[in-house]
Image 1: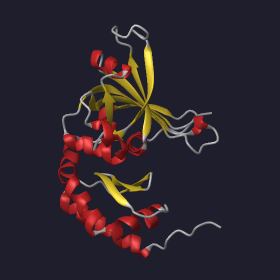
Image 2 (image 1 turned 180 degrees about the vertical axis):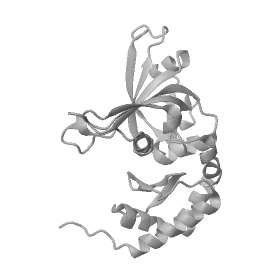
Image 3 (image 1 turned 60 degrees about the horizontal axis):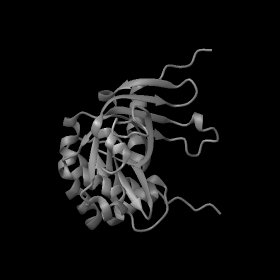
Image 4 (image 1 turned 30 degrees about the vertical axis):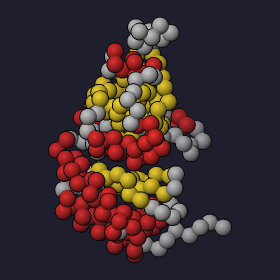
Amino acid sequence: MSLPAINRSAAAFICRNLARTSAKAYLCTIGAESQPDTASWPSASLITVAAAWDGSPVLLLSELAHHTQNILADARATILYDGSAGFANPQQGPRAAFMGRLKSANDARLGERFLGRHPEARMYAGFPDFNFYRMAVERVHYVGGFGRAVWLKGRSVTLAAGECRAVAEIEAGALEHMNREHADAVANYGKRLIGARGKHWRMIALDPEGCDLACGNGVHRLDFERRITGAAELRTHLAELAKRARRTPPKRRNK
């Protein structure tokens, strides 16, 4: 039995969205010689994660952790995202292993993206042993179910820097403006376009392909209908989504 070919562009989009929507992942590092219990051995850790505008992983790590010591000795790492929640057979769910090198992230905006996703981390993010890291993705292994696996080049999964530059520059101001001046539109995005419930919606992140909305302890993804690369285009599309949300009836609660 032959299986249909995997659409590599669609697989790359799924990988980016796994990185953007996951609150946690598994970090695999190579045991440093300075770590006698794990020297030269593969080592796995559960971590909290966020994503940069291009879809690459962003982490907040303590230098005291053994996985950080491993990274400082050998920057090569794999981050496994698991999208199998809700599947009766988890082997049928999507997952993606991002392989690359982790480097210190000197861009404060990346730190704000992480803290927007994990506000509880603000209490220790300023400690001297904590630093933000970003992965330079080299390869990604995507599995979308039985017989649905493909290797992708990192540059085919993460967006090009030029595609993200404008959104990255205006993100902070756009988030403040949307949450202060258009809170009703943000709530409608969540309740009418995504179909989630709750009060006190906030937009916490923007990238060329969508935005992240927080409500309570939950974070929800709203994909844009097209890729956005400029400020004017972003304003226009957010206004279009607001109009569509107003025309969309609220989801009814199941009895």
